[in-house]
Amino acid sequence: MTAFDQHRRPFVVGIGGTTRAASSTERALSFALRGAQAAGARTRLFDGPFLHTLPHYAPEHKTLTDAQRELIDTVREADAIVEQEIRQSGLYAETWQAFAVLLPIRTVGVMGDQRTYEHVAAIRAVTSLDGMTADWAKLPHEVLGKISNRIINEVRGVNRVVYDISSKPPSTIEWE
Image (cartoon, rainbow, N blue to C red):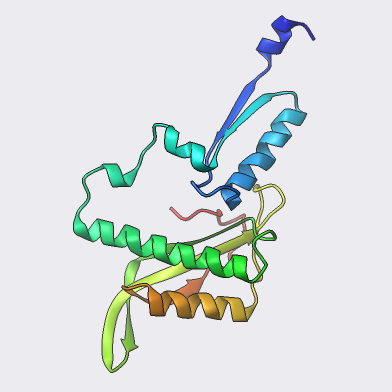
């Protein structure tokens, strides 16, 4: 291959993951980029702490209402619990992606002697080989129970946790 041919090869860039190194999204991007390399493309992955140096959309830099900040904090706390419990159970390496989302509905519950009207957190955990298809992760009931109990007890504003058992396709991995 000549130097000229070298520069004509496609260049594939992956930007993603989280600011935590070795996230499930980062692993998915790495897998995709290895496939591109095998097909002859040059690749570069921007991930982990490096993401802080890229110009990007960051909700904390736009003007948010207190209610919006509270929702962002709520989903971040729930998501951290999902990751902690999956890591603690030893299932992190087997899980392609796992995260929490807040649904745009409220639900009635009872906490103590009071009725509550709070958010629903949905947990999404999938296994996959390539990200093109995925199956819901068969997390043990004990792990799901611990995640649910921790979120309900530790995350203010959530009184119900559901687990997404949809495969891809027809569902996607992400929630939008």
